[in-house]
Amino acid sequence: MKFEHLIQINDHQNPFVPKMTREQLWNGLVLRAEFPKLFVSYLDACSITSRDLDSLTRSLQFGELKINDHVQFSFLSFVHYQVPRQGEIPESSMRMTIEEPTPQGLLVRFTYDSGHTEAEDMENATYNEYRFSAYVEGDIETIKVLREMHDQGRLDNLLT
Image (cartoon, rainbow, N blue to C red; front, side, top):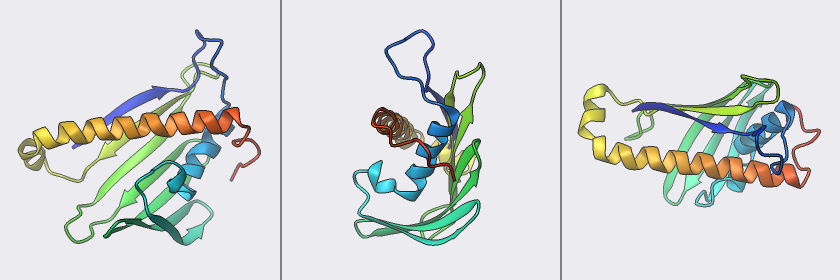
């Protein structure tokens, strides 16, 4: 299953929604990778197992399920999550890309690839509808948490 969707960050038509800078949005997306428990309530534990200038590797614990992933950063541009094949879990990826089609008109494009073939996607069409809905809801929740952090001043001066 491959799909993508956009979430608007700054709305020039709504003066009541505080505007985020690209840097603040970037800081929030990096925080999501480094401290995922702030964003994913059902995550039991996360440990960063390695780190370099533009990436990190994590071990995530969801009850009995353990998932290892790799997160790549492109400064002020995107955060790319890659899950390698692990047992019955296929290789998959998700990318959050900051877009700015107009000055300060920030958007985040969420792009998913479940790693399944077209035939597998056809077999799992009903399940994929639920997966799509869950991913979109999770992404909306991520932006909601980022907005709350922004309003509290927690996204300033964190550039990595």
